[in-house]
Length: 66
Image 1: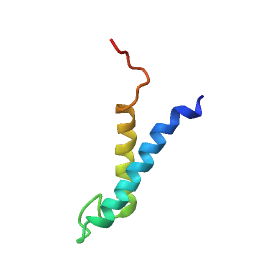
Image 2 (image 1 turned 90 degrees about the horizontal axis):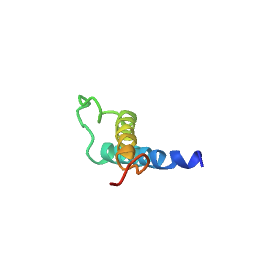
Image 3 (image 1 turned 30 degrees about the vertical axis):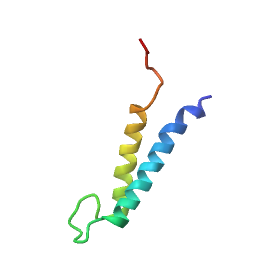
Image 4 (image 1 turned 135 degrees about the horizontal axis):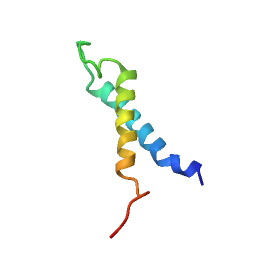
C-alpha cells in the first residue's frame, strides 16, 4: 500500500519531464540565452518539478468532502 502512494507523483513528474523535453525540442531557445529552455536537462528538471507539484494539487488524499 505504501508504494501506491508514490505512483501519482511519479507519473506526474515523468509526464512533466517528457513535456519539458518536447518543449525544448519544438520551441526551445535558439540563442542559448534562455535560462531554462536552452538546455534539455534544465527544461526536463523544471517541468518535472512542476509536474510533481501539480500531483499534490490533484491528490484526493487528505481532502474532506463536506
